[in-house]
Length: 189
Image: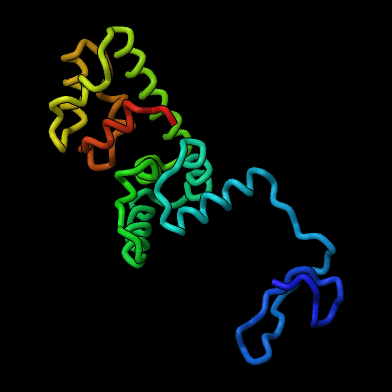
């Protein structure tokens, strides 16, 4: 990046250079100001960079920005790419599906995220109306549970939910791990 041009136009603000001998300019701007991204573009850029940088702690709105930018990529491909990326990192590898980032591996678009949040809030409200702490739902849950078993557990607590509705937001495998249920019931981000 150059703030003063040593090649050609003196108004060059940013230059893209080759690593070949002499660093020839491939492309450059000729304006006196750097182009500014809109707030939406900025958020997408920032969260895509965080994804490429293997970051896993996202707030709900940050997940939405990221999903908007990669919604054309199938969920399985997203996860495969991310897992191959974290294998190359020197930091301790953390599986993205065990974090708030895991939502992008289960929801293909922003509508899926909104639907999952709506179901989460509905279940939380029903639990609160009955005076059942969310920890009671988590107590005794095995490490892996199918959607039907999870819905059956909620029915056993007196929470009327539809298995078809839960199937829409369940993990692609149809099997929930403890963290999936914990994230669904937390729904505070």
